[in-house]
Image 1: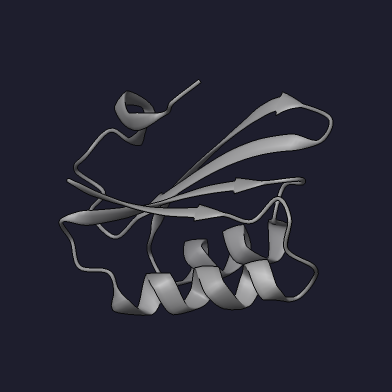
Image 2: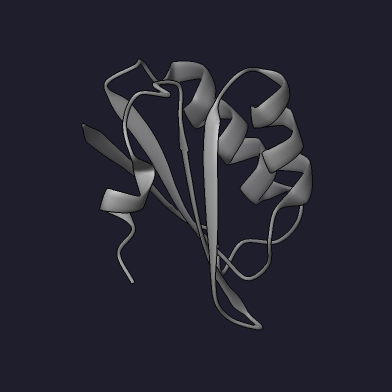
Length: 83
């Protein structure tokens, strides 16, 4: 699987959502988005769910989240969580 990294910690709203959506549009089933963000991006998670993506989130602390999103539901995203 190819990791598409998006570190959005320093980006201002709505840039993280826009960049994540753009990445998801270009991804194939052999890729996954690995987003690092200051908060849980609920609108992105809802959108990904609605379009059939697999999503996992992991909260490191109050200001650090890791979000993994993949089109391929057969892969375990938990394996690629870097925490």
